[in-house]
Image (cartoon, rainbow over all chains, first blue to last red; front, side, top):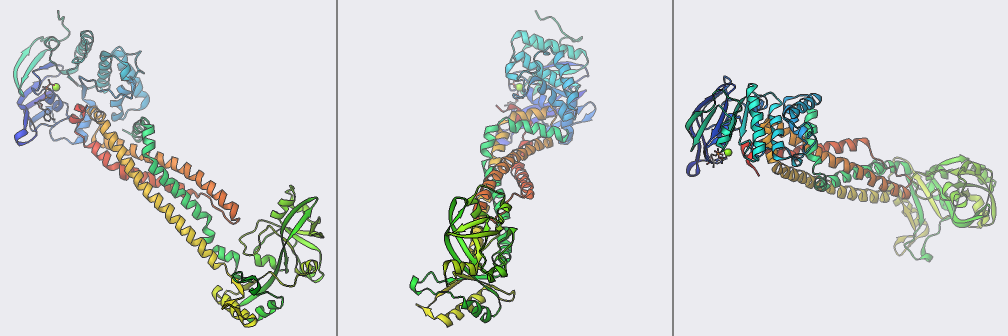
Length: 234
Length: 403
Ligand SMILES: Nc1ncnc2c1ncn2[C@@H]1O[C@H](COP(=O)(O)OP(=O)(O)OP(=O)(O)O)[C@@H](O)[C@H]1O
Ligand SMILES: [Mg+2]
């Protein structure tokens, strides 16, 4: 599904240049749940942005579902972000002036789906994440866990193949954390490939495989749960 | 992403900052209302500007005693001068004498002191007054010294509350104690140099009989299309000087054309249109800069939104059009408010001016409203392009990190 080779990302030039990713090669199979760990500044977010087609690498190759992403136009990349990929952020990134329902509808606007159908789909996914009674609330009327669930519904509405979650539970209490992780595990069981950045070993253990980053390089890979799915964490 | 969706998306942007948007749009609002007022005033004065007023008032020169001289040295017109001028001036068509006096006018117990004119039978055509009901003074009225009167609507309005003006034909009116029969009513006058419709016309011969005046108050001299006003005025001065001599080096009489008056109108108008035009131009420019400013602020404030939208599938073009449409809606909204204010303001102005000049016909042409929409859309595009471009070029990574 995802194949990157010798991926290098250098921010800035000359004296102040920072190598965020250094010759990273790694791949993710379809339906896999991968956790990415590593100290702050090790390049995790940089990798996620490149995998999510939001950023382009300085050098290296990236093959997504058999197609080379590197030389695509802005429009083609937008289309991939819209249909193939769902983003989940640590800070939720909901649009503050729109209700939960409207927030979830947004990706479908760029896909050209009509209003009625959009609303219907958004309701369906909000119900799926357990927010049927919060649809018309504004983000600041929701708890952190609820916000993240809205964000998950938003990531799902266009039926993506991959979910990229950058510290999805970083701002949440342990209860909400568990809710979110269970939702992600369920999605993974339905066949969605998930790549999740986390600082928390316990959280990482929900995945099949953990990839450790240090200074822009992969230093260790560990298979934790070949079968995948939710496991009890003491 | 279809067009209606784009507009809806942009609408939310404009609406969420209503008050700030309104303030920044003041320039556009003032600009558009000035354009509308300017065009509306222009339309009202097109009679003057288009030279139609000259046409309307005819080719005529009024001749008065020279009021610039001391009273005793002013010339006195005589009825003999009618034939003298008519025969002598090359290019003259008609020379009509007018007697004028202010008298008490009584009608059914009400009294009004107004203007009474002794006129010849073709006074109506010469002065551009319009007969609304009844008939004008005729040659036989003049010959028989009939006690008849043609009364202006404005004078009637002072004497009665009855607005059925036709019903006054055949009624009697008293002027300075003399009873006269109303035979005609004058309507709203077009532009007229010597008489307005606040007047009572009586046969010149009757006027002389009743008040025993020898000297006409003024003449009205019309001329043919081959002559110019200047030439006619020069001839009149020459002929009157020849007959009456000069006083202190000046003609004892004063020929007055309308050309001078029209030039004054034209100059006032030009200044007015220039002033309004400059206000419009400057405010629209300022308004445009305001639109640009608020859009730049908007883009800055919504950096995170832009990053998020890109992450969920917006292309740079989608972002660009969202902000461009937003700026067009913003400027267009200013345009609509400007149109409303401009329409209100120019209606008021036209109403006031029409009160002073009966021939004024100011209105708001439909095209200027379309033009205003066009101009504001244009402003939205021109001044929104750069902010929209800037938004579209934002790096989504930076945008998402932005706090
Ligand atoms: N836009 C940028 N310009 C310059 N340097 C950058 C930029 N983005 C990231 N970096 C640098 O690249 C390196 C990797 O950053 P990255 O955000 O990928 O780290 P991270 O592993 O996600 O860290 P954290 O766990 O704190 O989120 C860091 O040294 C960071 O300072
Ligand atoms: Mg990070």
